[in-house]
Length: 568
Image (cartoon, rainbow, N blue to C red):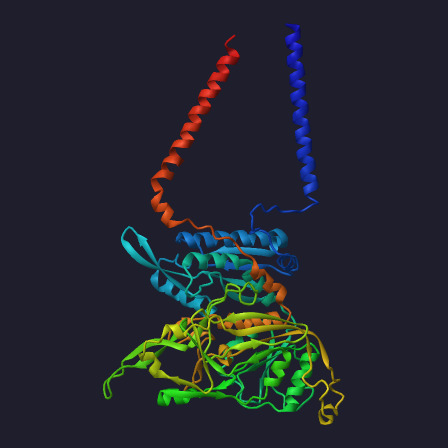
């Protein structure tokens, strides 16, 4: 009896010691944890791990950043997932920013009063959020529901709207939602970055050679003004014209550059300046097409061929036709009758999809080109060349002089002729460029001390696009109304031109660290619908029977063990 009491006392003392030791370990871990901060992400693609750039942005916030996210209420499963992923991403930012990140989820359809609800919708639209009209199934049948899958960020006394759902043409809804989740970190960073800019770098649109006017570039200028000090500059032989610019944009010139202006641009590049070239190597008057139903494309005499060739590219004098294209309205009414407009595929406006993982074009919506040409890369020592955009598999090229006629819309094209696949139309060049004027500089150009001639430049970059209309927004000349950049009034679709232009300038102007966040990939783990249908019963039986069988077997084993242990 005494031995049993002693044994129980020892066990009790041992248990108390273990409890005390456990409590001590827990207290020590919490104490150490108060000084050491680390978050563990066990997902294979590290979906909940912020990039170093995001952590830096979160830590450097100087005020409260308040997000209003309009994804509350009753939503389809895909949007519920997007809402939860948005919340988790903002919580990740809060882990590094603390209470400087605040957010609220709002249901824009919560107001039962239809008039006030419509007024709220209009207010959100004016603030810059894009509505999505969903068809929802309920007990009474199908009904429409308007949602605004976006957010408005308030920071430092300013507001910034941004879309959370990145809609993409020709992309299924599941992939579009997955791409939107991938882009969440970038979208939040980008909004914070834009509101944090204090001194904006200067970006200049070059004028003087018949470039696109301010009405047809207002969409691009407004988009770029969120990041940069945007100007329009005429070089006009002034050696210091580009002195304070970080980058310049040459958008669809239609007349020749003289050697002095080319020299100034060349030396701007040699000194580290960035250039965004949007050049049409063919002159194709569109007025003739509208008036006569036919036009011709002839080589444009821009005097830029030797300069671009020196830097590493050649613009070809041809026109691209692509089966993946936009539409054009054709009046099919008889003469004298009321117009009857029918939309037909217009193979001269290719819609370029992106397959590259380069951050400039990753997850980008289709980019609309118009009367584009192709680009060849040529040998240029030390220059890295990256194809950003290329045509589809079904492409046809027409060499100059190229005939463009509306009559093609009434004919069934020969598909076998569309075999010149994946033709480059946008190229990124990076490295130390050699001057066009090396060993052939005339004395007349080098009479000023404003520019110290450099035969070889510092490391820089440029982007060459073989179509100036990529940066052009459509406009009504009668009243000066400008459509959004990338909006096709005939197709009634919004394409990714604006995002492409902004991404290109962000990359050129040194915001590439922010763009690298866009390379983050989340694996889309979708169920195979065919297998679900074929093996539905089998998996139902497995999921129901096996757990029950395991529990029964485990119970029998435990009963046998207890019986054997206490049988004596």
